[in-house]
Image 1 (spheres, helix red, strand yellow):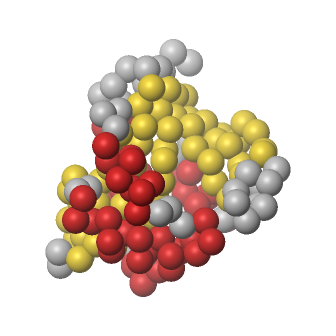
Image 2: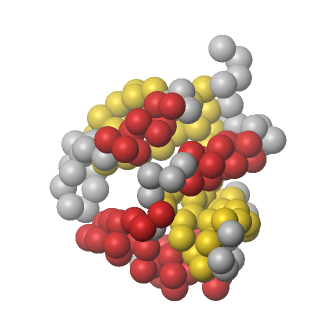
Length: 148
């Protein structure tokens, strides 16, 4: 059974395993996860299958702006609509805050993620060369749903 619930500290070890499988050299460290969970302006969700972590995502809220910090589904569970469901839940939370815009960065060649974000009306606003530690470029995207 698939459940989406609050991300907690006990999700960190399995999250790092997923990070390594999906992002390898750009994977978040344990310290990064702890740092994210320690901040008051963060909101993280976990996706579990039969009580096993299979994905997670998180937002940072900064007044009128929010940032999608991460969104990942374990490889064995990709292409099942879970990323869409998770993103929808994160955006629902965002709409209960003062945020008017959501920003994100995505690796320029991650077509699946880019298409997911476009499905939710994110628009590319910039390209940052050599943004990631591995030297890859990032596409900066924005979703603006208020005051249009």
